[in-house]
Length: 478
Image (cartoon, rainbow, N blue to C red; front, top):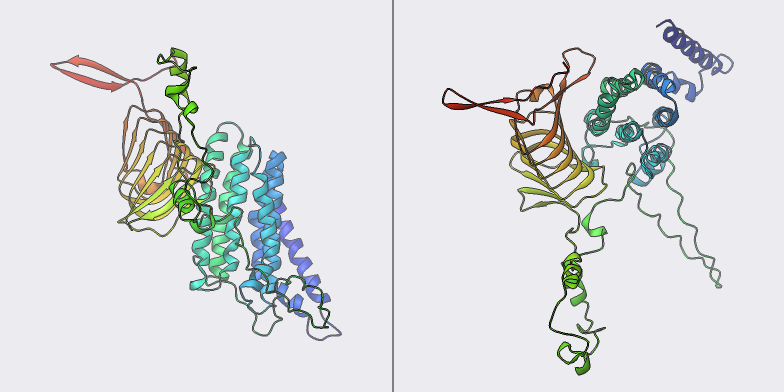
């Protein structure tokens, strides 16, 4: 506690010294120093000294990749501070100018995302928590209700919800193993909720306030124009390319940007105007089966086995993430996608998740029903469901309910972890032909620890008084 107070006092003295040196012969201070002394900037310094410093302190006790990711996280918040200073000195830019303005922050976020790629690390959940949480810093890109983003406060909360999925895994994994990891996970949550959320709520609830009289933001440099023509006239430079997604580390899932596959590719080939029989070979009489001497009418057992072992078509279809008939969201065959989001939904729509593997889907809003079918290592984060959440024929499913759900049913599933919020503790959980089902609920204390409960999968049936009585098997260490 004393060390934190000393750090804050030293920071305040440093700012006062910088402010005093900004005066020129008794006149007004320089504009940069005035901006740095702005209450919102001073509050951001205090925010970093309290919350970012706590995360960094916990990471230093762990070291390794966790410390590396935390240093990148700290760098991202430092870059945001620099951008907040520039916002007060710069006029509101256009879309291309905004992309160039936010480029330093985007580069740091991409650096954090790079740590989660490649071979899976033992600290993968730590790395994903840090990388996914940095999308909350994109609140500074909010330019109005028509910009396609949520309001800044809501954006911070929604961004942390995705990162919290992995943060909870850290809490559960190290709860009884290493308190340093638990301290790091708790500090990460407090960094955003209430830390960054309350800061944005206090100073920028409607987004950044750009300067009216400041300098204009620099736009991305256009491509170099071609060499001048022999006549002495040079061709005009081409317009700059449209800005890419500011904070997306993966390509968009828009169907128009993907090559067509399956039957769509077949029809595209047919409609291309090429002869349908192009590339086919003519079958002569000596090539026909009935005229071949090396073929007999008896099929050996080894040949039977060889034919059945190699199917002629792929059972996995193309990936889908689409709304069908305005009533049903279909998420199919998604593999290795950690950032699937459904945000435009309502209480009359249902969500059907089929054949997905090693992916995470976030459902932002209330829906009628959610079904997970034949999925492996699938994570689902949802807010509210009107009817039920169903898991069937799956393995290694993790579900986090942030709101309420009347019923959760698990059928023919091996390995299922359910995270229930305080509003969903009254949920009715039904299981059948399933194993390794664990339910985590918030602890009674205010420290945010989860309490894990294992649902029984073995039962004893005894005939008493004319009927069977069923009780779960209890294992004791005696």
